[in-house]
Length: 146
Image (cartoon, rainbow, N blue to C red; front, side, top):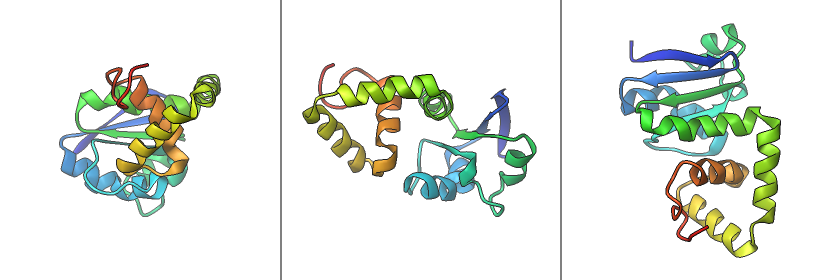
């Protein structure tokens, strides 16, 4: 088996792969559907509604009534990916982040959005990616100090 299942929350499925290639082979098509990303990613995250019957994880998602899926091969990306799940599943947290984003000055928002688009992210996930990077990376990750 190339992965193990970790359910820390009844609604969240964390799949830990043995290596990056196995993870991307299993999950890249789903991530592309959700956020438009292609290529060899460091981790995957997406709502379970993006999992199709043709995907290898479909039966697991259905059986356990999963709402959100995370795929990792290295533990260092887990905190980042879990913040995506939190943003999606925790209404209070999402509201806090959305308010934080709304209060950012337009110059910072523009720089962050441009940076994320260079990484390949589409508009619909920019705020979600902002918060995951903002709270798991170094303070100057976006090229300026907070």
